[in-house]
Image 1 (cartoon, rainbow, N blue to C red):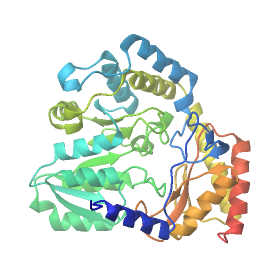
Image 2: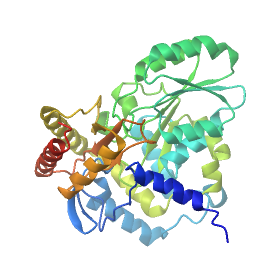
Image 3: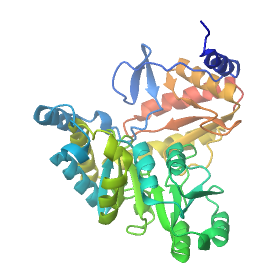
Length: 393
């Protein structure tokens, strides 16, 4: 019998030859600041659990209580079985938190993008997307019937050039950008994008997955950071990063919410969030609204870590957020750096092509409010040791 899947083996062999093949480690416990990875205790610098809320007692208790009342599953697609009151409560709470008119919940941030983009643009429209937008945005754009254009990363002159050339040829034009770019940690110039959108009568769409819970008052996000409430048409947020649970949402106008419930395919063809996740998210958002304690601790830790790595001579890129890319370069060297850190008791995943361009490999550090200064000091010493051994510093 012929081996029809032999081509997969050939491609895996090439990954090994390129030095980028990996096997996923196993975490024997919660995704906390220190984890049991493959049977060894390591400092975890690879999690999006920015505020430590995934393991917070209040959040865990809310989740357990929801299971007792509602069970473990939502039962069906919400357009078939209806909403549970928990979903209604969370959407209302998120709209209040984000200071926007309405919120529609999705099963993930990826589902937000692949569901919303194709529902709000059509043939005869144009999408203009930042060159470094997240893969889920790219997939959402591909699923739409609109034409597409890409502007150079954060380059407002290039965006204006495209608008000058193309705006009059289309009905609606949708400008899409990340709020915080996940690989470099830099911010989109949202005030300038809003001005261009107003001048050229365009819609604006911001994926704020890494800004929600991190930037702005109590983590209200990049839009709050820039003081742009009510000026962005579609704001995507995730519930799986700083919020610490799972899911995503679109903050927008009430009529858009109505439309998405009829045309966003993930809402029509995939079961809603489970009650335990919904209740846990409600508790996380309430905690953010009560206090800035967690966001302040996150930023204190992030700035401390960045300052020390920069002092050692590491290239930490252009990050303006707790995301801290430690630039290595070559793919194989990046993976060696990551593995050497793990042997030193620090877990940081190597990020290489195709996630980032070839030759731009980095170990992307994700700082959390749950890290202690002792954790960070140990990690900094490990970076120094490995950096010198591999001639990175």
